[in-house]
Image 1 (tube, rainbow, N blue to C red):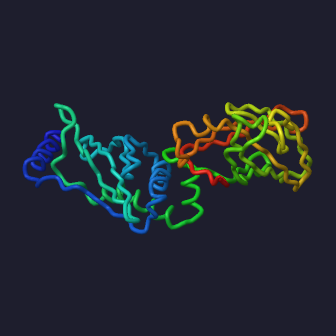
Image 2: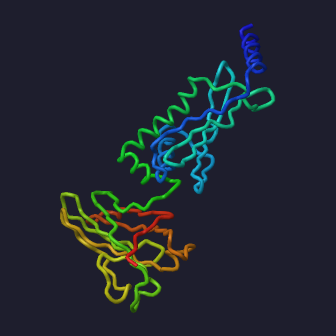
Image 3: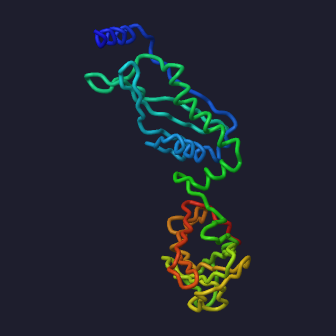
Length: 281
């Protein structure tokens, strides 16, 4: 009898409710340049995953998520649109499970679920956007929009991007005519021995800048506590700028080994996709 009563209640709702209204919440004061990364970070915190990403129009859509209302299973997606320093959150494709499969829900979303799903996202986006450190972390950790990270801290070392130079001329540099310069600082309490395994796909690397030929490279360097040394990465220009003749977007993937004393190499990966590198020329 209880199940029959629930069916009667739901049937009444089905045939007497007005057309479903789209539920939307607008979050103000969110930097449009960082909005996608902030939304992505909020989604990770709230355990949502994405189905679609339109980078040109700054639109994100989640995969279906489910909930149960009066024993009826429901699911929906959330759509995020970033523009004019706002984020518009809309629940879309809201459906309930029937004997015929998933059917568009004719009823309006309850205030409780508006707060639970859209409101929770709005609060999380607001909190991240209002905190400079959290917003920066969202940008740096984004998978959807890779950012160039000029400083990496790992294993007691600080690796800092200094500059990049293209179109270098001279014997031995062609085709390795693009070089990136980095500083490596030892923050450990003891001296470390660094060994460059030169495990990259573009050219080479050296702990000292070669003045003539790239093949004469320094593969080992010791750093005392607090000391800073140099690392130079050499690339083939045509590979480094592959797919982007105008050099507006750069791609850098470099992996090298750092060996402490006589221990096994520790790999540090510097990876950026579709990032702008501040070249000197």
